[in-house]
Image 1 (cartoon, helix red, strand yellow):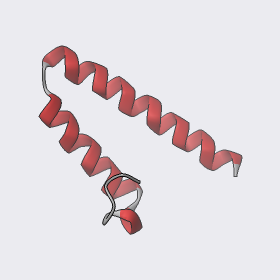
Image 2: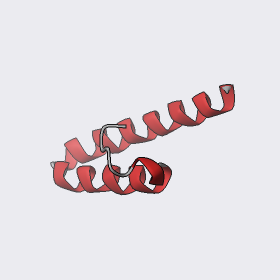
Image 3: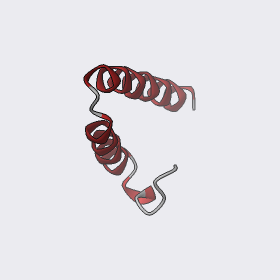
Length: 52
């Protein structure tokens, strides 16, 4: 269980870093696409719900 939480926290930090870089570049659309792609790869069974 703990391993899954660590993975989730690491993913959250990675997304936050990408978000900060995107804000500096003013590339919020690209950030959205990157997150959507990562979510669909990381959680293929949850693809139908973009908020999970």
